[in-house]
Length: 177
Ligand SMILES: C[S@@+](CC[C@H](N)C(=O)[O-])C[C@H]1O[C@@H](n2cnc3c(N)ncnc32)[C@H](O)[C@@H]1O
Image (cartoon, rainbow, N blue to C red):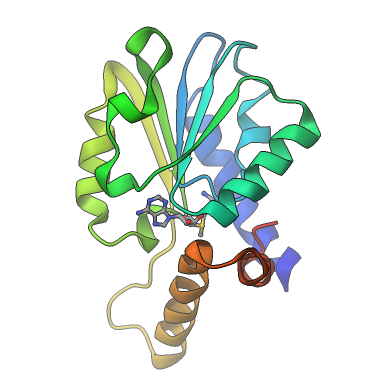
């Protein structure tokens, strides 16, 4: 189940990372990084100095992402714990004050007020920056089963603010390991 879910989403995740056009010298904001699955897609393309700033509001996700970063020895990733709805450029403390890319995968759909989060983070980008978002949604008018699955996904995805054990269970159910 987990690998089926991951397998279904992985091509879209990879496509979003490709569309972002990461390259040496750019700084990428990974909005709502979760367990940090996007980092491995960005790492080969970007430079060795601080290049990825991740932000997520869950301490459980922060711990899991930090573990992933340490395991891989990525020295150019800085992880923040912050609510995207109130995120500021001061909080991100950008190196050279410039943000070149924003990536958000499966994040906007679980955030209340996602439109204002998108607006806020879009405005942080430098004029020729790029923004890539990959997400899921249920088309209006779909049946009960689809809506129940959608609700289940949202509940599980929001478990990020809960204690680590519940986060681990939720992440496993969601295929976000
Ligand atoms: C479904 S997970 C996606 C994680 C990751 N981007 C991925 O593609 O695997 C959604 C993430 O959004 C985070 N999140 C939800 N609302 C948030 C908010 N207001 N500010 C920051 N992070 C938020 C959750 O903590 C969770 O890690």
